[in-house]
Amino acid sequence: MQHRLVRAVEEALGWDGPARLGREFARGSISDPEIVTRLLTPPQLLDMVMRRSLANPQFRFFKGGEELHPDAYVNRQVTPRGQAIPMADMRRVGSLLREGATLVLDQSNVFDPTMEVACRAMQWWSREHVQANVYLTTNDASGFDLHWDDHDGAS
Image (cartoon, rainbow, N blue to C red; front, side, top):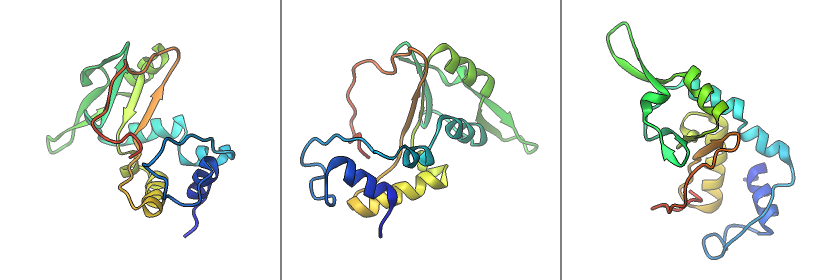
């Protein structure tokens, strides 16, 4: 199987397959920006957030290095059957992004078919579990304070 993203990653890293994956530090740049914009753009991310039922911790916001309480960007919409469904409050989301904040959406591949295909291609190539966590930081927001993760950031 040849996938444009897999081929672009190999070219960016100067690799011929995944054999060096996890054995050494690697850094590169994808030369074709169309590949990246086909995967996900900020408007596509906001569309995903707007149309899905999302809840913390899968969907979260950080501002000034601190995680915000979900009430700052999520409200509960009640269905005709009385079920409360967490949905992004896009007015509040827009306000946070204009002010400068970091939006985090874990496992975006669950919500977007293009991201799902990209993750499946990378999974097939690497023979490892792959998921796409998306971070959007706006204005001069700092994102996160210095921290460590308890999982591989490449997953």
